[in-house]
Amino acid sequence: MNKHASQIVVAIVCGLLGFLLAYQYKVLAGKGTTETNYNSDIMAEVENLKNEKEELKATNSELNEKLTALEEGAADVGDVELEIKKQLDTARKQLGLIDVKGPGVKITLSLKSTMFGTNAGDSSRLLTDNELVSLVNTLWFSKAEAISINGFRITPQTGIKVAGSEIWIGAAGRIDPSKDIVILAIGDIGQLNSGLKFQSFEYGNYTNYDNDKKESDEIIIEKTTQSLKSDYIKSVQD
View 1 (cartoon, one colour):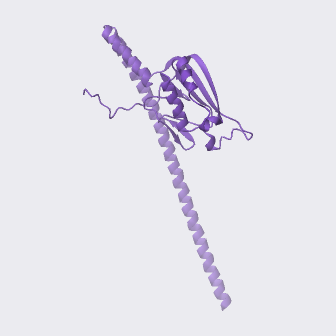
View 2: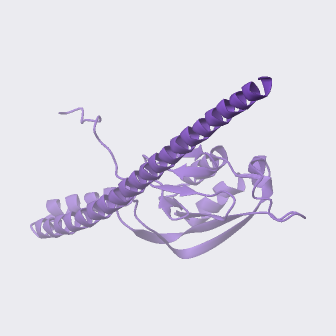
View 3: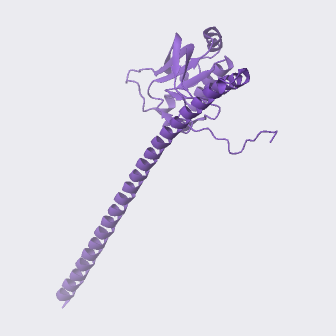
């Protein structure tokens, strides 16, 4: 009798285990399908945003061309209109709305190699947002008229902030501090060099990088890819 009872108990336990395994497999299969669908939705949304960005850039370029043509036509009217056109062109250069060129300096920061390689995986050795901000401020103080970091234009609304293992340059670009960082600055070369003499590369994580500075009679800095916002500022005269 005890033998039959034991067999019945074993059969019941095996049945329960089989049911639990089947249920768990069903749950995991459903979860995998949900995650796959979720990832597909994210990828589709990212692709849509990329397409919208390209369309907006094309529209913006077209509008800028039309506006330039209108301004040049108005500038032919007289000296006052010509002066207004010059002021608009200057404002566009300063705001980073157009590509610019001129004399300046190129600074390249490269992570130093150790006996184990560059050791780029050690985040404690990498440049931080605070150190980049310090260098940019030094260049502005040295009368730089245009600055870019790895091709991303610095404008009055460009913030520099660490995000995970990368550094955000405004909302438009990210850079990897384990790779070369190239800073371009246009301005009076003498003043830029004088300012950089006070920019120490011998503190913080700067000591983990080789720095190379070159002068150039013509540096090209491309326009910003970040939209400037003016939702809250208003003229006092309005």
